[in-house]
Structures are given as C-alpha cells and as structure tokens.
Image (cartoon, rainbow, N blue to C red; front, side, top):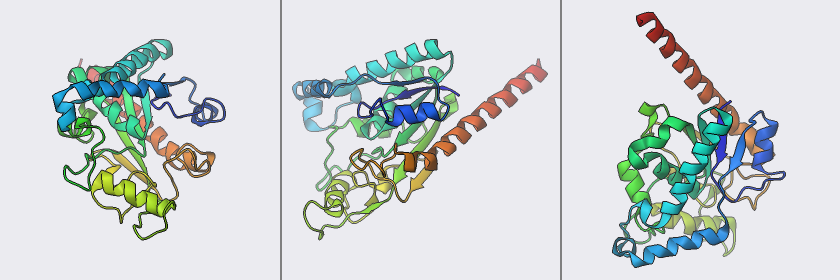
Length: 263
C-alpha cells in the first residue's frame, strides 16, 4: 500500500480515521500538522489588494499550508519509501489540488493519488448569493488545475461526496436541512439541492476523477456515525480507493514490461 497523508487537522488520532485506516492495512499514516490558530495566518491576505478584491491566488493567504504539504509529503516519501496518497477532508481537498499544481506540478512525482472527502471543488458564484470565502484561491485552482489535472503525471483522483441532506430554506432554523440550504447557497448559488450538509453534491466531484457518491454520508465529524471517516461509512468508499491504486500499480507494471520489451 502507498504511504498515506491525511491532510486535515480535524481528524482525531485515537479512535478516529487514522486508527481506522491503520486497522485496514494502511501502515504509514500521518496527519498534516495544522492547529486551529494556524488558520489565523490567512488574515495576512487582508494586506493584499487581490485578496481584498477576491481574486488572489492560493499562495497569498494559504502559502504556509501548501509549504507544509510539500514538506510532509517529502518526509513521508522518504520514511515509507513509496509515493504518498493524499487523503483530504473538506477544504483540505482543494488545498491539496493547489499544492499538487504549484511549481509546475513538482509534487506529483511523490504522490500516487488524491482522495477527497466532502471537498468543495467548484468555485462559488461571483455574485450573491455566492460567497467565495477563499477570496479567489479556489477559482485560481479551478482555472489552472481543473479536474484531474495531474493524472497524466501519474496522480489518480478519487472524489467522495455525500448526498444525505437536502437543503430546505423553509425548514426550521437550526435544522440540518436549513443549515445545509444556507451553506449550499453560498457554495453553488442554490440551496434546494442535496449534499453532505455543508458541501453541495454538485460541487464536490472533479471531472476525470473516480466519483463516489454516498447517500448516507454527512460532512461533519459531529455526526460520528455518518461522517466520511466513521466505521459505518469508511468501508463504503475505501475499497474504491484500494481498487484505484491497484489498477494504477497494474498499469505501471504493464508499462514497465512494455519498455523492457522495447529495450
């Protein structure tokens, strides 16, 4: 199995997704070291005109995060001796795409695949009710590294998305359906759609990726039995990831054999 890097600071070490992955045969699992106060670094973007106008590239406010991904992947490649599988939850998904695309895709040589769990991959509409809280960074990623952008460099993409919650603007305040409606409205411009309660299904998949939609999956770790990393849900998507990696390995073996025959 490839080395794994869980690119989300919201995953518990004990009894959480990390432990569940290890129990399922993924020996090398690490969590990207990001603490909640680290996200305050985004505020540096306020000093940038493009950030204030909502047209900033990821480096402006998230460069520190991308550097950590670079460093963590390099370290894990050395320690595991294998290419790294990036597993990213929520915003970690589009940030991982940004990390893969920067420096002319240099990180791709150390990464076997990117798997995203409930990640918003489509840039929000520029006009209300759309609300781009990334201040242009997600639009930049979408425009410059669209879909499975680095598949030609050997990086597989798997997008996992939930459709458990239908947004409803008429639902009572505080209900999952009302909260989902508000979130979907900001992310995709419509609230009356399905998704995982935070990210609308229509914005959670990438063109060219292996797309897996889970009817029962919810976004938040606050729904412990229904979120992507729970024991009840993980086995509905992890086999697809394993299959994708197996196909990749088989394809590489065939290519190696063909090169050998040509020689």
